Image (cartoon, rainbow, N blue to C red; front, top):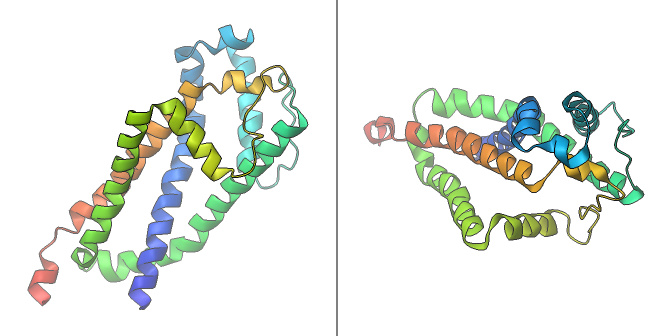
Length: 211
């Protein structure tokens, strides 16, 4: 029972780690996005100005000590601020899950992974690796725009403040759909690398020896 608890905790840790790595890497590569997506043509601001406003937004979303969002060049509506406050809460929840489950992951690594008993959990890792592949296939079939809409409707059920109007929340112009597509692809790669590593490591012969 204790090992199963640490295993479940480790799954939450790896998932939250994948999300956090995606968030911070997307922040890191955003200067490239400004160029790739021609964002200067969307908002008619200089690249450094766009980057600065994006930095203000990301600091607000990821920093628990930042309690007020005020982008200097991009005004926000009440509904827009509400949506970002909800997203901030989700980001902090992910950070908290990662911190709380890190000790469980350490125990799982020490007691299961390191002594090479990971094959006991091979089927679970196959499922974890295959799940996003199925979701990705669904996204390809329905198209990213529809998938993105469904994602928001599920994540923000009963709350439509994510539907930004550029006239009132011009920040959406520097966060186009293509940017979020890149974020989803980045998350997919990170997730598959993390869980794929543990799946391939689970193909050990240790369990066969002791069984």
